[in-house]
Amino acid sequence: MSPASGVPRPAAWRVELPHTTAAVPIARALVRSALTEIEGPERAAADSDTAELLTAELVANAVEHTPGDGPIELVVELFPTTGGCQIEVHDRRPAAPGELIGPGPVTPVDPWQEHGRGLLLIRALSSDCGHRPTAHGKAVWFTLPALPAQRRRTPGQEH
Image (tube, rainbow, N blue to C red; front, side, top):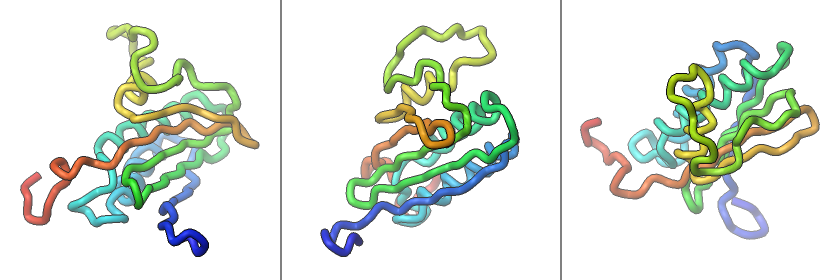
C-alpha cells in the first residue's frame, strides 16, 4: 500500500530478456506467472491466454525489428484495485511500430501475407495500446481489463 494514501500500489515486474527468439516463451511464462500472483492460479487478474499471446507478439516484433544484441525489457504491471494489467516491451529502436494507434481496426490486413497480424491482434484484443519513446528507444504497451467474475475459474472447476 502507498503509505500516504492507503491505496494498494500496483505489483510490477521488470525483467531483461535476451535479444533472441528464446525470449518469446520466457516472456509468455513470466506473464502467466505474474497474472496469477495477485489472486492465485484459479483467479488470475486478467485473461492470461490473451496476455501471453499479445506479449509474444510484442517480444517477437522487438527481436525481429530491433538491431543489435542489447536486451529487451519486459514490464508487467498488475492493478490490484481495479484488476487487469498493463504489459510493456522496451527495445532500443526509437522508430514507432507500424499502425499501433489503438484498439480497433485501422487498415485491413492481407490474410495471405506472412507478417502484419501481430499489431492487429494487439489493437483488437487489448482494452488500450500504444507506444512511447524512452531514453534508450521505445516502449510498446497494451492493457487488459480484469476478467469478469463469471470467466474466472473457481477452485475445482474443470479447464
